[in-house]
Image 1 (tube, rainbow, N blue to C red):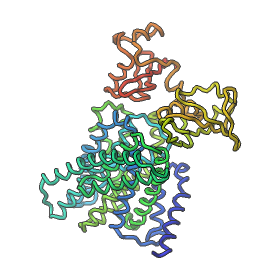
Image 2: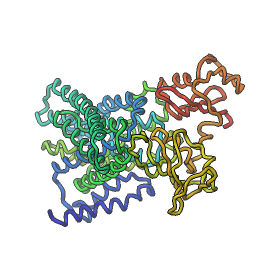
Image 3: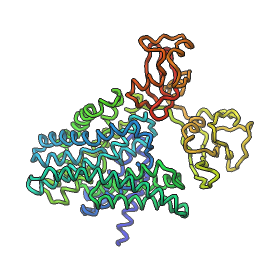
Image 4: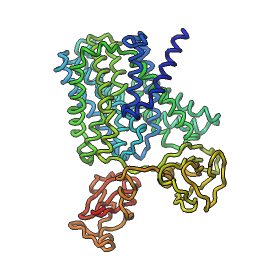
Amino acid sequence: MDPLVTLIGALMLVISIMLSPLSSRLGMPVLLIFLVVGMMMGEDGPGGILFDDFELAFLIANLALGVILLDGGMRTRAETFRVGLRPALVLASVGVFLTASGAGLVAWWVFDMHWMAALLLGAIISSTDAAAVFSLLQGRGLHLNERVSATLEIESGSNDPMAIFLTLMLVTMIAAGGTSEGWMALLMLVKQFGIGGAVGVAGGFIVVELANRVRLTPSLYPLLVVAAGIMVFSGTNALGGSGFLAIYLAGVVVGNRPVRMMPMILQVHDGLAWLAQLCLFLMLGLLVTPSELLPLAGGGLVLALALIFLIRPLTVMATLWPFGFNRRELGFISWVGLRGAVPIVLALFPIIAGLPEAQLIFHVAFFIVLVSLVVQGTTMAPLARKLRLEVPAGEDPYRRLPLDVPAAGDHELMLFPLRGGAWESPRPLGQLRLPDNTAIAGVFRERTCYQPSPDMEVATGDVLAMFATPAMLSELGKALSGRHAPKYLAERAFFGDFVLNGDALLGDVEQVYGIEFDQLPPELSLAECFARRTKGHPVVGDKVVLGPVTLVARATDADRVTKVGLKMDNQ
């Protein structure tokens, strides 16, 4: 291999990584920076690199997307399926079909394409992209309410089978001169979803068993998981199923089962996912010829804006209205129809198949992705805050280290740096309200470890080493958080001054606080009030207005609100 090739590749990675801090400063998605660097190094940019090996690009892109989906699946909590599974699956199936049909109609009108080629373009750009959604949701510090975040994450991880099915079906029909047997198309769809789902779940459990039964050097566990995940991905593709769906579900299973060295696995996979995104978007940037985007910019912009402002919102409203989303949630989900690497990868199918208008389809898909990342990616975080869809969140530990000792159970050693306004004044350790089943292991200050005692004072700059279980992480993070959250996200401002049990009856609340709840039976519990308003799937942050009082869901267990904040009108 020419050393110059590896030098240029490494240089592109270094440049992209060094430019990544611009993402937060300029408010743009970091993936867009990677894409632009690739375009700058391509044949039309200063780099002048000619890269047109579409089959190699297809192979690299599939492997990269597999790694990204595996990491995203492991970070998706099984609890989120309680509220997000059904709406996400409807959006990932019916929603993709409606989006493809609408986008195909606009493409036929704008580009004067053959109607089947227009539908093929619509199918290619119909799915939201997991890499883009996971990157923006997890990388922007957004803590959205569970109903919204779960729906977006599950949708982006599961909508590829329908998009792939539509793309392959249309590619086959165009190559065959417009004929296709309906039952064959239906069989392809069933195989994509059925085999992908079954192999993914089964593969996930096998990976868990392998990791827990085999004693390895700690650094080998992350490599075992990623290698086994790629096996699941490739094996599913070989069987005719959706490898994307399979590896995502395998990741969900692994991430929600007790697995040895799980914090280390997640930490390494975070780096692997970033490397995959870097390589993927740099390569896709190299693959496109920017000068060929200019002639279609006008029509591409019309199609992109129609997709963002018309097709996606109508699709979301048509598919999600039965599931109890409020207008703010529907508006945000409509906006976060992010297109990323998947449409560009799907656009390689017609090129590899040698279809007419394949180059036009590829460049239009690439242009749509650029517009989506610029318009939707840069405005997602501000819009979430404007719509007040965030919920209070605690501090995350700087490091989590598994103990891997039977007597310790699932306890971990967690390091929490103390920072923010709440820690500017020293506070005794004895005054901290820490959750049960946690303990302070030590305090680090100026490179010295101190043994904790109740009267020892800690302040900004200190690091607390804590023994705790993952189940206590959220509560522990809130207890040690010192960040200045926006006013509306402060605990008292968001939840109110009073905390009640979900089992409390309206009649008892009326007597204690002197409030009258008109037209509601006094034997109704607060939890039942939320169940009625949210169609049985309440999440933290849900609100129920009862006359002069607003009830705010503070904690949930399965489908029941266990803690309720009470806010008066004057709060």
